[in-house]
Amino acid sequence: MATPQADRNSQALPLQGRRVLICRPEPEASRLAQAFQAAGAEVRRMPLMAREPLPTTPERRSTLQDLDHFAHIIAVSPYAASVLLDEIDHWWPQVPMGIQWYGVGAGTAAVFAHHGLSPNKPDNGWTSEALLALPGLQNLNHEKVLLARGEDGRELIRQTLEQRGARVTVLPLYRRFRPYYAANDLEDNFAGFRPEVIIALSGETLNNLVEASSAFLATLNNALLVVPAERVSEQARKAGFRNVLVPDGLADQDLVTSVASWLMQEAGDNGKPSKDARD
Image (cartoon, rainbow, N blue to C red; front, side, top):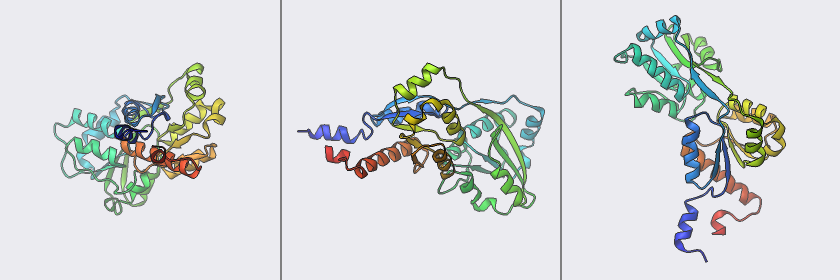
């Protein structure tokens, strides 16, 4: 018979023994791995997207030196916000006043807030669409907007704001690329580890996952694939993944909670006893 202490330990580890493969870039992958391990999961990290800052160009230097000319500054990710702030600190001993700052999601906004800024962010959601619904981005007649992002990215924000009358300057700060993995590493992570849960929090990461795992898709298609938005969910289903989850949030604990809830619900739907029932 389980002791009360055993019950408490079991309840504290909702993902006990579950195999989770995290494909996020570093350092996010290591941080998220700790959260899943704390919930009892067995975790492998295999970043399928890496990032590196782009070299400074005269155009970028000029844009940053004219930062006070912009009414709105948008960062599309926490990494974009971090690189942008590092660059600003190089040219501006104090951030110019009067600028409206925006983060696509709570994580991006938190980077700005940690720097002493007061960013705007969507109350619900963390997508470009959610950002574009903010009141401050509706009527932008001739207002200058700086969009900090990677070398390549979705054009939705730029195109929509220009349609609303804004003068948008895109500031590419970094490039993304798929890291190299030897064939035996891929086989070990996909066929050997046989993940039950795969975390791929961007469309580009998903594309890289599909390319890297082409020889193992029959094994992976039954895993729970966690993606950031419905747009990427549709992309995943077209690639053959059967179980796709858009979580309730992208913070580490939100991801852990959403995965645990989905797996418990799946167990219940399959007629298996839930973890509480087994205890």
